[in-house]
Image (cartoon, rainbow over the protein chains, first blue to last red):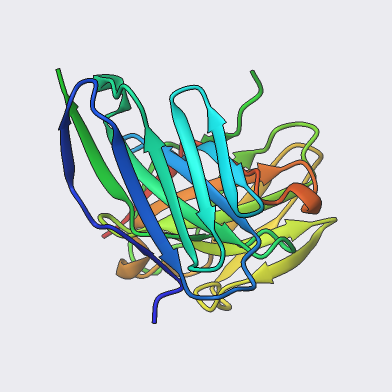
Length: 111
Length: 115
């Protein structure tokens, strides 16, 4: 079983739509949950991180964690064409910094 | 805004050759990492490094790989004898401390092509 499974996509939405990106993880030892954005042939860019179950909001982005079901989500409100990218979820135990990534979901926001 | 830098952006090498990939982490960061991403696949952890020692490494990071902090600013990944399957993007990342290891900042990557 993969440690992190991410909805594969690709996902295509019209501008202004609400986007939901989702991952599940298998090991309850993971303590930190991150979302990265990656543009083509670029390095991952950290968007948000959360520690506990619940929601964390940053502008148009909301990260949600449900540790009881081992489910993490990223919501993007009022999506823009500039949000078009691959979104990576990642998990971490909180010790030596080994982040385990999902496969990524490619999002296209059409004007 | 401080950023992680990596050189070269693209390296082409022949199978069996040694390559050194270079990174300059963010200046006040203490933890450094290497990840790789084979084209179309997920980002994979290779190694983490702190205080001139490897903190953790994955099964990918075998004896062909080594890391070094040769001076106060550079962090390098050496592959001794490259194989075709080493072709990938290699990302360096850094974080302030182990307590914030989840907050990693990635460089733009080095694309390694082994022919």
